[in-house]
Image 1 (cartoon, rainbow, N blue to C red):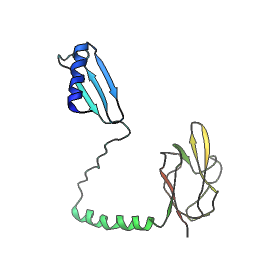
Image 2: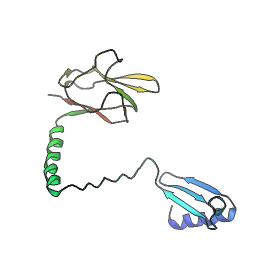
Image 3: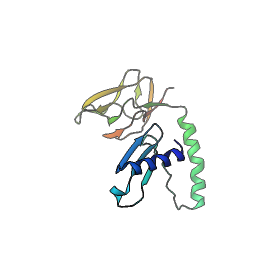
Image 4: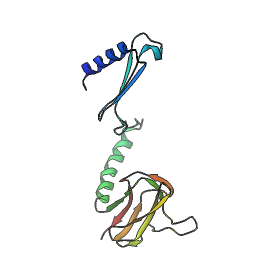
Length: 163
């Protein structure tokens, strides 16, 4: 939808006498409010991107240049180190639990060797507890999520060394 179409839509809504109109398509969301709702004599419009594509800005830190330069070489080294590991990701959205119940021991610890089909954690989704099983064999290198934390679909949960 281009700007001329939006402008003609605003004029149409203003002439129709409607106080508010909302329009959503795959790539835009528009809300048009006329003066009868806002107290203005001219219509106003709000054009926003859909929630699925939030615009995130990195926070600006007031750090010395030397600290920034020192941190820069460490990041690629950590990424190169993580490349040799397999990442086990969450297959669903829910709450991550390391134990089957509060009084039981955790499923896996860092350094523990796992096999294909071993239960690594439980993710609760809509009051259902789903066992998350390993699809690879290897050693747990890192647990990336805290116990009882919410997780997103495809969020990394564990790093496994397959060697």
